[in-house]
Image (tube, rainbow, N blue to C red; front, side, top):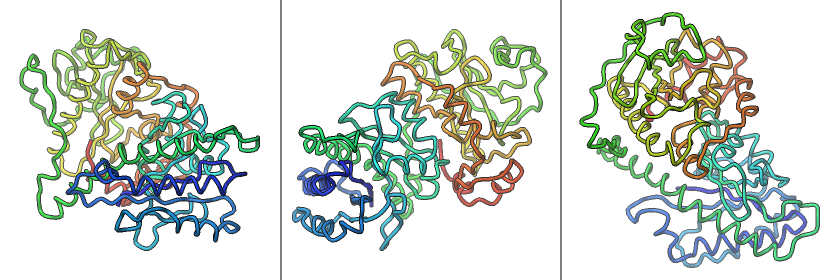
Length: 452
């Protein structure tokens, strides 16, 4: 079952009419002749469900809301796929065997921050800083009538504790709920609901359907289902892929003259650093991180002749988009091979929003974070919060905006956040306590079954 939690995006002072519009749009959506064909393949066992969430004075409106819900026009479908939740969205739990929503719709303002809607501030807090920071990185500003889909990282409390993977941000038609209502707000509200439902069925449901199909194949004993990732693209001019060596970290590197620009020495083939080169091609170089923060920690450096960039904010779509995609393909190829060679290993790829070293480099790091070099809160947060930008986020932002926007103030504030487990989201008082927690956290252990 793929489930969307959809709160009322209408004005509080016209809640009755706004909720009628919400139920009307949900009913039409589920009754549409092409709903099932749009959402999932015919062979998929996935079923759509919408949870209509109402927070405004639920007790006072309870009976009226139940009457509205009972009138939803869903005669055309065999099974009712709408539930009514009277109360706070944050309190929505598993009930009657139905899972908590994989996606939730949350109101935002033009800056992609919480709007003055009753549910917005609470849900932004529950999701953690990853929601606002990723939204700003990918989309910069919101426009009326558009939906902005954010995939939460595993460290987000909303995902770790509630299983919510996607947040669908949209601007409510009535931003200032205390002022007089604009004309034809009802039509604008219908458009907002329709766009939210469309985004859900076109972008969230297919991903859930694919996971369900893979799991179904695994349950039936089809082991090929575990390797359904797309094939790595290799240009003909590059020749066959380079053979990948065994990962063996050589130990501490020699002292660098300049820490900030220390990576340039590798690109200049300094003799003393030769043993720190894991793999090399004419276009790029994989090196061992001198002070690894996990059992496996590599850096991928593009060579200046391939791409000369100091950090992600200097990337430009026309100049770097295609080459960056090739760089990411190679990084995923290496990560996949390492995971195959080292059972139980789970690797993650990403860039630091505000890197401490130049030039541009992509981290390939295992999620055990078992390392004596991992000592500070700043180091931990640089890899486990939205400060760490995954390649898909960077490519999407580059394609949609032409460049990468990083709010340095917000990014650096992430490094000061309290320590939280990247698996279960539980807060920890200090680094020794965090490391002890990692050794017994079930969610961290489950990450080891993931993939890049």
